[in-house]
Picture 1 (tube, helix red, strand yellow):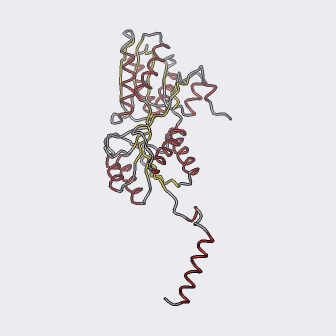
Picture 2 (cartoon, rainbow, N blue to C red; picture 1 turned 120 degrees about the vertical axis):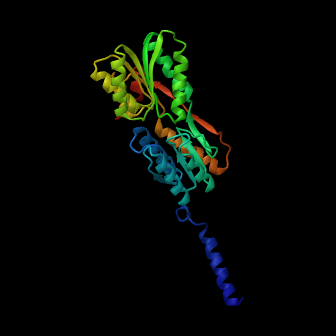
Picture 3 (cartoon, rainbow, N blue to C red; picture 1 turned 60 degrees about the horizontal axis):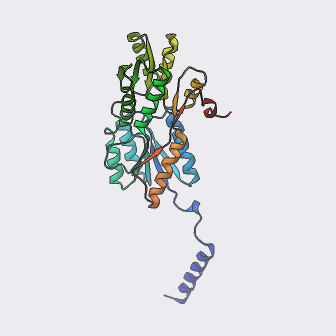
Length: 308
């Protein structure tokens, strides 16, 4: 090598050392992928807000794909995220089995995939940020039994049949109700988590059982539909919800919805990002991480309403 080339190389190295390491903005940013079960559900809208906020604090970018309760679309979306080179995926699977192809794609691409809220039966699920589903069901049942004086007819509007989350919630509820011999569960129906379904199935339940004391619902959207049908029928049937989204909180404040469960989807989204961050750093993380839940009714609603 000539003396001139050696001198130029030495000068370049000296300049590089003087400048120091490249700033973070010049380095490749971490991008994570997100695939939630629904785009327009208030619970998932809030969860995505929490994911984005926490990711921004970490200097990460977020790539989202749409699913809207379409299993094939969710699988294809995760495959696309893996192909785009994301460092991890947060997913709320539409079905515990039906979207296992998404988990297979993540495994094939060596990308950790963390289930948030709903879980999967896939052996390729890296972690699950979950709720204590059966205990929540038990707590709702205990609260309901107390409110109706330990007797009367109850209807259950469960969630999608393929989602273990909603099956576990229902199992916890029926487990406690079985301890109250004067309480009769007169109907159980699976279905999508929509307000329209809540209206229709509640109308049917009230026709079949005009003296219905309480209605268990799998989430706040279904609960708000059930509440609407109860009010239209001029009944005093208690309706319980779950998730603590703002419209449900306002309904509890107005005395129209009996109770809901606060799962705080914003904090849930943030927790999902934190758990993924721990895993990417190589820290030990439990396979299931639970988020706390709180019963919200007329006794504590003022503490839980969003501050304006």
